[in-house]
Amino acid sequence: MNKILKYLAYVSLCIFFCNDFLSAQENISANDNTETENSSPVQEFAKYSIGERLFGGITYPGGTLSGYETPERKLSYNYGIAVTFEYRFNAFHSFTSDLALSRKDYYIRKSIAGDMADIHYRFDFIDIHSGYRFNYNSFFAGIGFFAGYSVYGLMYTEVDSLAIGEIDKSAYGINAGMFIETGYRFILNGTFDFVTGINYDLGFTSYYSDEDELMTNSGSVFAELVYKL
Image (cartoon, rainbow, N blue to C red; front, side):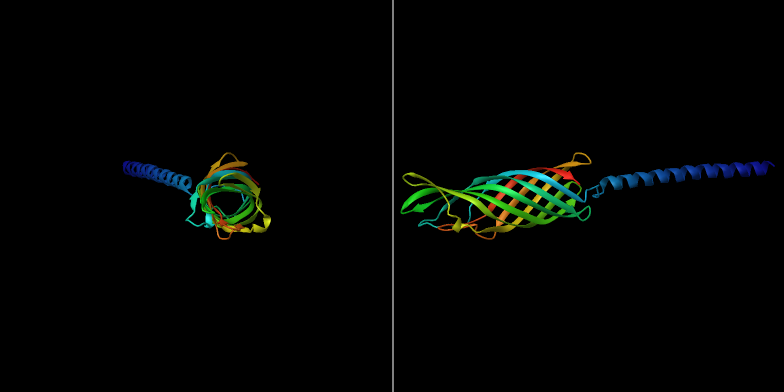
């Protein structure tokens, strides 16, 4: 009888320690899974989303410039507004597109009839950007193409006197090129996100061809409120 009691006691102790050991292993495994889920780049996302974007930044004259001496290109500014659309294939990959209305200013200093003159170009554009975006957690990076045209152009020239004139629309061309972007998405709630980032547009075609041939060369920062459908 005593041997049986001792045997049962030993078995009970073994079961007790084994149970504690298995419980500890389960807790460790659960913690590992939680950490893995927290560090996973996969987050909840909306398949479709639309947004409104405000942007502004700098421009630098691209293209071919005329003049007896080497023209001096100067930094200027751009700003605008866009309506955006995004379709998410999955947590990592998405297609993006936007319709943008922007104003771009370009400053050039060059020789005209032997005198140095400051030329100020101002153009209003309607452009469509479309491309691919890679998402990792809240970070993203994208690349794509844009195309559009100028709806209004103004040239301001200073030599000895001031002259302001609207640019003849026959000098307008297609504004097309490629863009790159990167940014960060702040998840506000289940309906809205706030997105901010930087964008760079590089033109391949001349949107203005006369004495000078101008191409898009601009960078901007943007802020966007996104509505998830």
